[in-house]
Image (tube, rainbow, N blue to C red; front, side, top):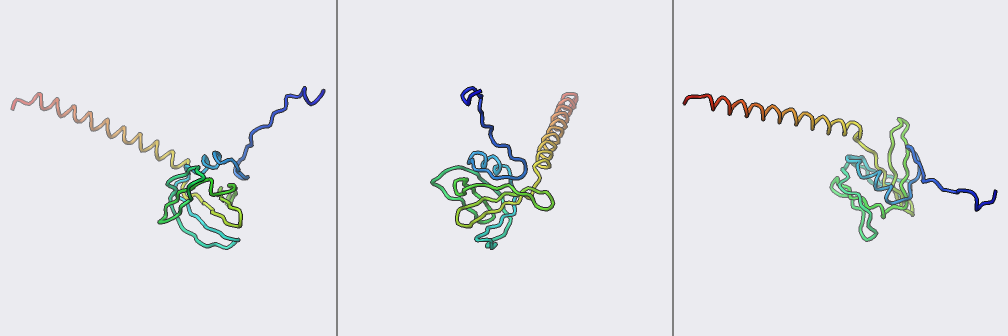
Length: 150
């Protein structure tokens, strides 16, 4: 069988909990729903800044900067050469955004996406139940007023 006869196909990467992400769109997907994070600005292995913040925007634009100020993070994936997924000794995943020249922005999620989704679903269900009660009590009030002879 010759090389031409082979149905050669390169699979897309599959990264599970650890690995290096080069594709800017994949980097965006990983970062967009992180929410609240602890972040470390590391230069040449030394921690320059450590704080907590909230990721407000993740975008891909080679003409704009990544901005971190006032506990707000606006992340441009074009500011970084790659993203490295790592795990802590407790098996918690964190994200290293790496720039050539020894600069690194480490993002450690402070919220659990599973818990966040549960809270969103629970809050929506609770709101629906409250609205049902309000609407049904409103109907009861209208019926009572219609029966009132005054």
